[in-house]
Image 1 (cartoon, rainbow, N blue to C red):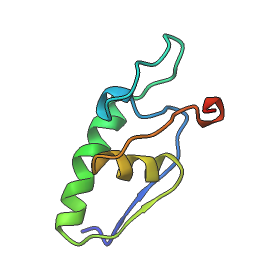
Image 2: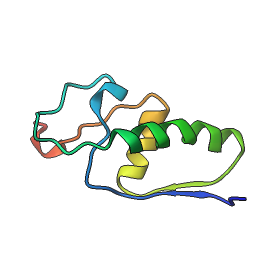
Image 3: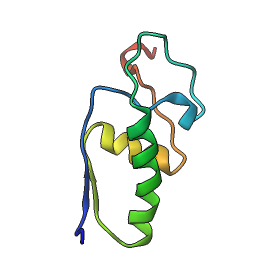
Image 4: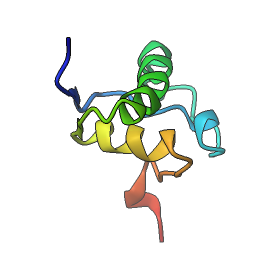
Length: 78
């Protein structure tokens, strides 16, 4: 049994095809297995009223799981 889920930070960003963003450059670090796993379990946790705590990438995953977008290189936004 689980009492809650902690979504940690990570080196890779969520791939932009999950939120309709522009494609990453070829040298961008990705983690497609984490993207799939986490984006699938977030709605299940919410449906079960299970607490979710997102840290850094984790909060971005919650946002994207519910239709949000992100600027993966926010420092380049003008």
